[in-house]
Amino acid sequence: MKKIEKYIFIIFIFTIFILSSQTLYAMELSYFDKDVAQVFAEAAKALLSFVGGLSVLFLILGGIVYIYSGSNPEGQKKAKKIITYTLIGSIFSLLSYGIIFISSDVSSDTAIYISNASVSPTSGIPGSTFTITTNITAYSGVDSATTFASIQSPNEIVVASVLLRDNGIAPDLVSGDGKYTADWTSGAAGSYFVDISACDVDANCAEAEDI
Image 1 (tube, rainbow, N blue to C red):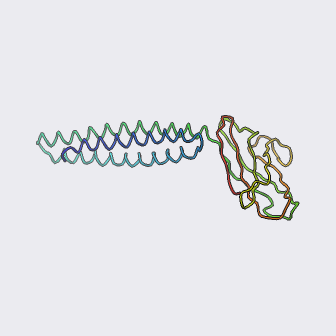
Image 2: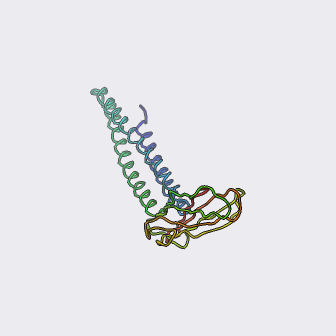
Image 3: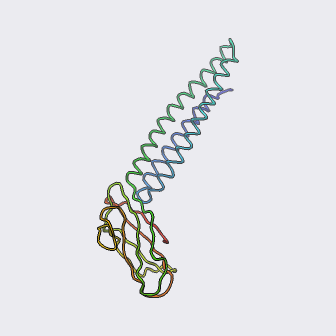
């Protein structure tokens, strides 16, 4: 049991500062990739939950040491130190969890998301018109001038780029519903892939590839 309370304190402090610093670092990286911040935040929350469970075990251990120390002042002193350091570590863990929770919320508030992307029909002869549709959402608002679909050949050569619109003008159906649409007419036979890119008004960008 010698110096166990110091090890408890070191474990808590090390865990808190590492997780917090990594989450804040992810916030910086998230300017380029918002998913990075979310991954760090979720991992930090999971690990801090583990630390919370560990603190409960140490509290139980401190109680057991205190009970079995009987009238031994030295044993009681060690038990009190274990409980005290565990409580201090738990408080720091809760504070750290709060920081990470706020950080992940800020990250999600500045994120832009592309989802439910599709191309219809999925195949056709040369000269066929394909409708590209996707949902784009952003907390600060989507910059409609940046919502593009790039049509690429299998060797990743861009053969066309079309602006996706959410203005209620065909092929878009409803203005302002977050669903962006564009038509593209094929000029030659072959297989094609579609990449979609968009940015919000704060210049945070996202991509969906190989649709």
